[in-house]
Image 1: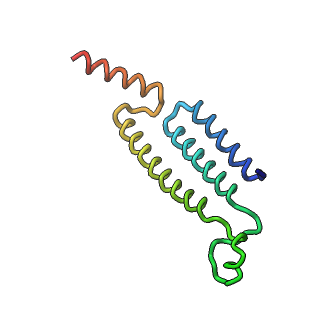
Image 2: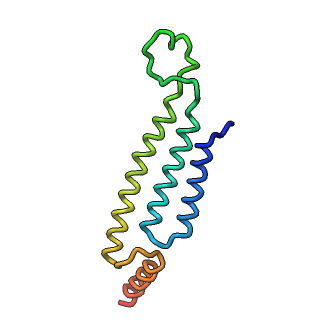
Image 3: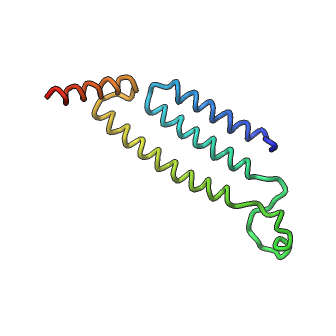
Length: 127
């Protein structure tokens, strides 16, 4: 398998985002890093599926029907379009949940959120 510069860029962006996700204490930043990881995966698959010398799968001439090997496969693009829609939905749900948690606990820090949740659990069990 021949990796190009853009493939390596996508892999590097994925691991850089993964490192940021692991080290971040802010929930908003974690959502951004997850979005960047998703973007890196989509970039990797699109760049991997792109072959030089192929034409898009729009058959407008009879010569393309005879030489089917020069037509690029549309499946990776279709799958990544679906991944984009799912990723946007997941980010929207995450932002909604963070908004609700911020209004309840007035913080976006993971450790502060855990302390507030433990206090809430202790208060509920003490009643």
